[in-house]
Image 1 (cartoon, rainbow, N blue to C red):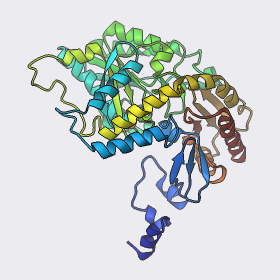
Image 2: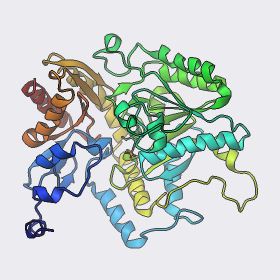
Image 3: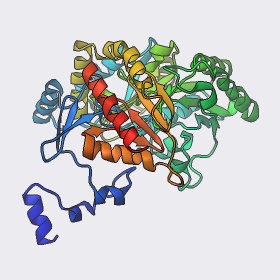
Image 4: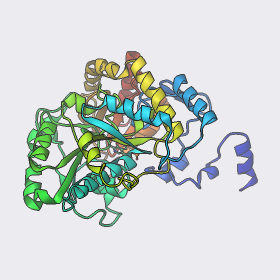
Length: 450
Ligand SMILES: Cc1ncc(COP(=O)(O)O)c(C=O)c1O
């Protein structure tokens, strides 16, 4: 290490050379390292840069800090836990609090989904759900059900399972053939039919019937499960069309396919309910969760599983492991402590209901940006908005990237850019004034980059 960089580290600052070793995930590394976007602390609705200036968090970190940042009850719970018990093996041993957290999460899920399997991220949660689906059919003597059905424009994390059922071309194309035996439903977005819809679009329920076509092609006896996000987040907020999820549920029931809702983003209040399943009145067989379960403080993910699925495994000699799956850090004590404190905070501050109450005004304010130059569509649902922008000639994604970059450096705003779409998903503690500030800053940036 050069003397200059050692010194700069001691001084608590970073020179560009110091940024080299870290290969950042899902990041334009070279652009970042030329003009880094660094934060050093956070509190409630704001991040802070090392010069002390505030950045309004329009992204809840990455759809995860639903209770806001560095909330004292969560921080203190993590600190207490670190002082008491650092780690305990989750295979064949346990900590009492993990059972409490499983019960608390199951109580928030739709009736009948009453067992919780813990992982450490959304990606692991998804891979866990897919593996449980395959193993469930296998232990019931229907081991021929091996196909998994995802959806175009779906995002289910970066593992091989999630990437396979996911439907984002750039996430898939460099990584070989992925899992065999995967098929995809069409995505549900159609700008001509749906542009500038608040909430769930009227058009599109019929797209669920494509599952009938897929079943007819492969035969139901070869299909294990269907996985969808109730609202596709990572490809720019695509809420399920009205009636779509009900139709998927009916077709899955007809053919004995398991239905998995990936609620890594929609879980824990984003759509005004503990889980989006409740908003839509549709009960899946499994729900994956992560992010909001600890309000982003400590990595944790998991799957809530229907009783019948869990019970199908509980057979054979009692000393034998029923499901050969799990992680060293499943139900890690720090994550469990963070999860319990987070759920307390959600309940005490009634944050899911708060998101629901804010939704109409949020959607109206979002739509007020409709007339800005180059705005092609605005979609909202829950405390979420995505704005599609017209690209500059030959530079797809450049404008949204500029908005994200200038937002951070010039406007003190953190938002997400996805292709040529900008997305706001603030913590659920956002005040009406702060929501107004988010949209003011964003409209200024859209105008400045037109
Ligand atoms: C719906 C969905 N599933 C899975 C994941 C993957 O989660 P993680 O990044 O924690 O692995 C994400 C992440 O954004 C997601 O949005």
